[in-house]
Structure formats: structure tokens, C-alpha cells
Length: 171
Image 1 (cartoon, helix red, strand yellow):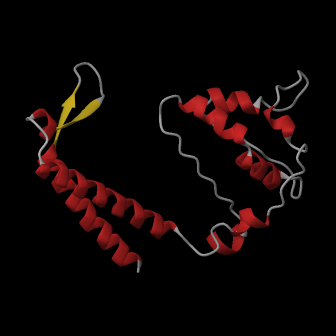
Image 2 (cartoon, rainbow, N blue to C red):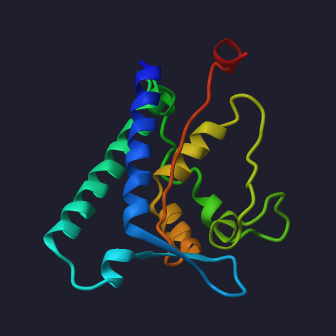
Image 3 (cartoon, rainbow, N blue to C red):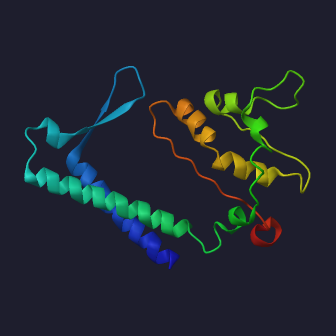
């Protein structure tokens, strides 16, 4: 099945490339490395029904590629670990979003969400609540609010995955 998906994706990418070759012109701004894709149809005159058909065809092709990629990553027990982690008591992990008192051993998490691009490393002994903390962070609306501030005008995309039983599945 994966080889069929890969072949389908290759065919769809080839089709998308053909659409790009017909429709788009790449312009490089002088003195920068930014590239701008300009719709050649829009710059050549009024939009016609053919232009709209081509846009719709491209949109469907992109959606099909996205769907194929996501389907290739899917597996039956993908959310199982997240679902079995117990939710924390409502006040247990509130401290993660509060400003740190001066004697803390950890960095301010909320500030990191808003201003940082690096990793925030959460570690501890087995059974100390790391997964429960991660589920709490994931479920809190404050997480998305802080990350939206960090993302500014960019589209925010948040993903999560809980690794488990790593010895038998990956090694």
C-alpha cells in the first residue's frame, strides 16, 4: 500500500509542478534571498473562467497531496498513549504558566513559549508526572495563546505525539 501511496504522491507532485510551470513566475528581490511567487494569470489581465478552473484544479491537487501524506503517517494506535495518560488535577500544574520565583531550577515556560525558538527540555524520573504535565500543557488554552503571540501573523500549527514502548517498536 505504501508503494501505491508513494506512486500516487509522485504523480500528484508531477501534476502540481506542471500547474506551477504554466501559472507561476518566480521573482527574486534584489539584495535579498526572498522569493515571491507571482500568479502569471493575474499579471496578464483579467481573471477568466479558465483561470478559475486551473486554480480549482490546483487546490484539489494540493488537498489530495496533503491527504495522501497524512494518510501515510497514520496508524491505528496513534493516539492511544495520549488517551491513557490521566489528566492532572485542575491546580496541579498551574505553576508552569506562572512567573518563576527567583529560586526556581527551571526557566519561565510562558516566556519561553512567547519569545524562544529553542527546546524546552522537560525531564525527570520515571513516574514523576512528565507525561501528565505534557498533557496538561497541550490541553491548556494558554499554550495556544502564548504560541499565537510567538507566531505573530504566521499561521500557527501545533502537533503532538507521545512516544512509548520505544524499545520494542524502534530498536
